[in-house]
Image 1 (cartoon, rainbow, N blue to C red):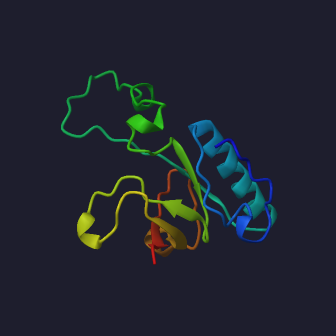
Image 2 (image 1 turned 60 degrees about the vertical axis):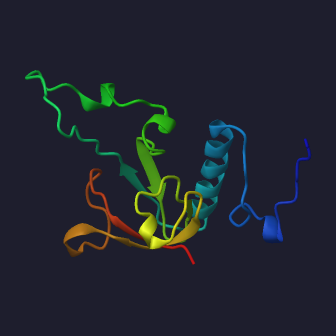
Length: 138
């Protein structure tokens, strides 16, 4: 316990090694470092904003801003932040599996191999665009 690995080369490279951190802030810091590494290497990184919906609920006539009622804590939103940054080649973890018939489990790790935009677009055109993402969990 308490051993901190300083080697960040070869199989321990920032973009390769699986890292486990005790706090969400440390995870966020590591993810930011990985994003910066790929951004500096020319990867096209997309920002996807959450689009929350009230389902089977009555709304007040004063059009409540949904951002004020959605928790900021990602542990209360199914693990999804308000904004997600993705790119082809990104390592991702399945945090909450809603269809176990596909053979995946919580914690499965894969890589984004394709980002598909609606209406045959080649890229994100609007901040509210949400793509389909193909992930290889091999």
